[in-house]
Image (cartoon, each protein chain N blue to C red):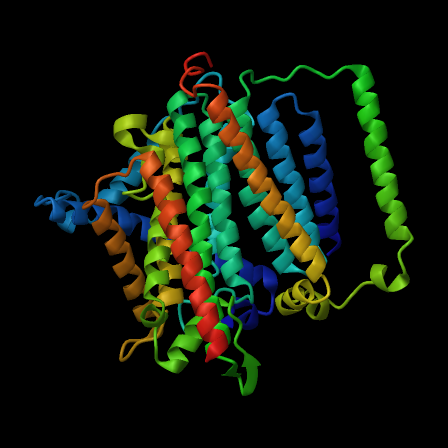
Length: 174
Length: 343
C-alpha cells in the first residue's frame, strides 16, 4: 500500500518533469505517458482498478498516442530550442498559482469528501455508472458536448485547409 | 466460478510467481507451435510441404530457429533514440503476459478472476501501439517510422469497433444471467467478468455467436487488425516497408516483437472464444480441452485468412474501419440495447 503510493507519486512527478523539461518533444509526450501511468497507479492504490484501467485505456492508449501522432505529423526538427527566461518564470508562477488553488479547494472541502471511503462501495463499476447517469448527469452530458464541439472544430479546420491550398503542393520539402 | 491462484496459494508472492511462470510457459509453447503451424498451414494452402527436415514433419524447426535467434549478434544502429529504442520490445511484450494471465480457461481453476477482466484486456492491448510507436520512432529509420505511423492509426481506428462489438455481449450478459450460483451463494453476473461471460453461456446453453453473429464478425475482423495480421498487415508490409516498425531490430530484440505478435494472436483468439464461442463450454471433453480447441480453431482461421486474402491499401483500411465497421457496430449495439430493454 505504502510502497504503491510512493511509487505513484514518484512516477507522476518524474513523468511530469520529463514532460515539461525534455528538449525532444517526443520524449516530452512519452513523459506525459509515464505521468499518467503514475495517476493510474494512484487510482489503483486508492482501491479502484476500474478507474485505473480506464485512465490507462483512454489517456495512454488513446490521448498520448494521438498526441505522438500529431507531433510526428507537424514537427520538422527533433530538438526544441529552450524557452526564454521570462517565459519560464511566468510559466512557473502560473503552475504554482494553479497548484495552490487546487490544494486550497481540496483543503476547503467538507469532511465527508476528503475522508477515506470503503473502496468496494463507492468505487464499484456499477456505482460509477449510476452516479454518472444520475447525480452527475449534467456534467456527463456537458463533457460529451465539449467532445462534439472538438470534433466539429477539427472537421472545420480540416475542410478549410483543403480549400486554401493544394495538399500535394507542400510535399517533398520536409 | 473458477478458483484463482490466490485462493489456492495463501502467499500472494508464490501465487504471482507460479502465475507468471505458467503464463510464460504457455505463451512460449504457443509461439513455438504457432510458427510451425503457420508454416504448415501456408504450405498446405500453397500445395507445398513446409518444413520437413528438423524432427518429425519439421516440428523442431522453430526450436532450431529460436536457438539461431538467441545466438545472433544484436546490431544497434547509429543515431537511434536510445531510451525509446531499447524500451520498445519490453513495452510491446510485457502487457501481453499480463493480458494472457486474465483468461479463464476452465470452469474450476484460473490464474486470475477480476470483475473488470474485459476492460483490462483492452487496456493491455492499448500498450502495444505505444510500444510499436517507440520502436518505429526510436529506430531512426524512415521505413520503421512509416510502419509505426500506419500501425498506430490502424490500432486506434480498429479499437473502436473492437470495444463496441464486445459491449453488446456485455449487455447480453447483464440481461441474461441476472443470478448465478457460486460456492453455495448467489451472485449477480458481471458483464465485464470474463469467467461470468463464459459461465452465462454455459448455463443458458447458448453461445453468443448465435445471438450476436454480426458482433462476432466485427470483433474477429477488428482482432485481425489489432494484431497486425494480414490482410491488415500494412504496418510491416514486406514489399513496401522492408519489415515495418521492427526493421532495425535484430536477434532476440526482433524475437520479442515476433513473440508478442503470435501471443497477441493467441490472446485475441482466446478473447473471441470467451465472448462468442462459450469458452470452456462443451460436451464430453474437459473444459480446458474445449477452450484450447476453439482458440486454436480461431488461430487457424486467422492463418487461413492471411494466406487467402491480399493486403489492403491504407485508405481502404481506414474507410473500412470508419465507414463500415464503426457504424455497423454502433447499430448492432443500439439494437441489442433496445431488445435487452424490451424483453
